Image (cartoon, rainbow, N blue to C red; front, side, top):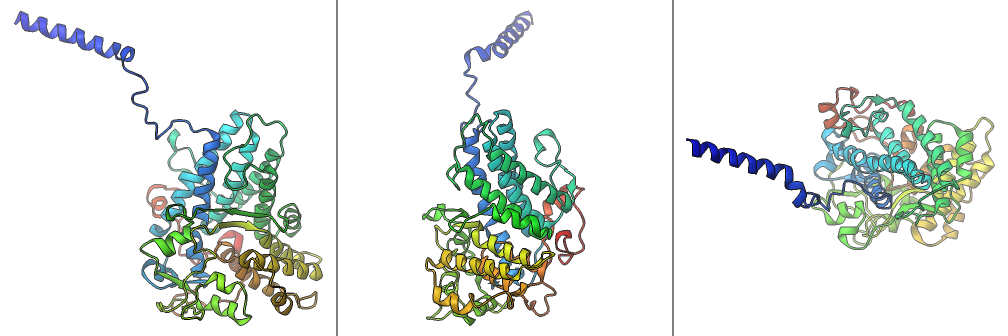
Length: 456
């Protein structure tokens, strides 16, 4: 027994020495995973933030679903067929919500914090533009959102309160105003790097900030400020896009869905959209859609007719960019604001309308198509221009973005006939199932026809 007791004591001594001394001989870096760094430099946060944001804002839930609602696309099978008949449930939108909150918006929040600590406002400015654009897209789809208590899960706050849509819109404008100031700062410690949208060009980011500010000012019917922001945004040669690579693994989101994925046969071009383009022999048609047996054929909204044109090269080629905003969008905004402001300027609205369509046609086709413009667009003047004409052409130009869905809910144009028996075109997205299940602060909505504050 004594020998056994002595043996146990010896073992405890050795074990104690092992525990207290292991740090002296074991490399402290041994348990660090190089693939999961605890701190990411700002120049590496920027491209991951931009890429993840663009992929979601131009992807299958934000763009495909809203384009189906707007009868630019038609879902003919599986989940897409359900969307064409206005069936969209909480589990369907989980991925969009999660990826924007957990990836790009979290990256933007971290980047703003790091930029503040490093006295590098140029980084903060880029992050604030991306955060504002993401918030704007989400609130226009869902309504109230977590913000003031969001992004604090590592501090134990996993059920954040929801800010009202009014508060979110104020936040968006504040973020963009700050971004413009940050990007123009002359006291910046670390030079902006890693930007894959504008190659670290701060002037371009300031224009983009003004463009996004104009978009949301328009939704608030703040016409005077919207015009001011438009005039400080893009020139005719500017654009706000995310470019993608030519390999399948590097391709843009709509190509990934419509060509690479197993769901590639689930969507076709919608008859409503094809017919509008074909009615005037619009030169964008052959870029938006792929001919079927030499003709452009649309699948009727809500049907499961598959003998129709598929997506064209405009958004269904590997390197097709995601359009985040454009000069065309700015001129359409200007046209609407000039027409609806307290003292309408119909002549100015007609001029902006013409510039918008011309810019879209050139951007999509690579050709000015002057003859077509003169015959179909340049005939408008102060006596003929209307809001309906402006939104109708904006609907054609802003295909493959979420903008037509916003415009439709704000103006009622273009005049679309809802799918028979499916009810009205949805006024919003439902909240994701993860929020419903795990966040008691998640608002309860009656159905997807409940209008959002901004579109009432």
